[in-house]
Length: 389
Image (tube, rainbow, N blue to C red; front, side, top):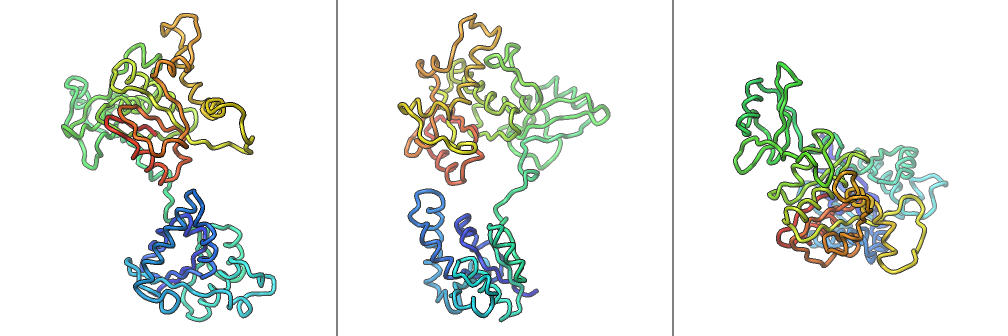
């Protein structure tokens, strides 16, 4: 099978510095114009600047193995990397409409030159839709960089349905434990044990890694957790994981309105105020506007953060004022819990550098975080900390 050649755009390297090693045993070509463009991002304080600096370090380490701009250097995955001067190919390969000295045009010119020279399959890899369209127009194959993308269907759901004999379901209700009926189960995986002859006859449980057996999930009291009762088995599974002191990191994924934040806050308040497992409930979320930003907000730090943290306050206020939960007619708010030291709400902007012991930490809207930011948050944990994303 012929070796393929991939020409990388700047946005691919800034998106994933390890993309250099993501093309198996094929040839990777980086136009010198891409290196020049990436140099403008290296002083950026965010993830883009961090990735630009990492790419520079990777290329510098590869430079020791050979001359990047001549024959190139081999990669550890069996591939080959070259850095190529790209500006001189425009006049001979591109039409007059694409003669402007832009980085995109230089990438196209280099890819066309490589295709005409070696007759090898050549592809331009870019996350820029317009560049992919232009590459197709000049007769080049264009691809999006999708190596780091994960289909939602491939995500680990944490649950599984298993069909077993009806007498085993009855025995599980009686003994509150069961041998693992099938293989390929994960620690703390929640499952629905269904009678294969009567699917309405079922039980729910969780794989306990300490005993390697199926155990029942947490039995929610009749009054619920701060007045909250799970409405389906997925919410029962979530509460079981949130309340288990042996599970220190839980991620909840679901559509908007499925109760992820509300269940996590209810479980956190229960562990802090009733079980006294933790000294405080810390709720944090990234500061991302939806749509056009309003600009600077007046007031002190708390007043500036209030609009961003309002979804958290709404959920806490709902729990505090549940009808029939014993608080009477007087309205109670999240400010009362903050004054008592039970609750702390803050943006993720200020979490770097902290060391947080004995706290129940909820990171809301974690899908807006980068992998680096998630790692930074997790490494803030001190002794006796549980994380919930």
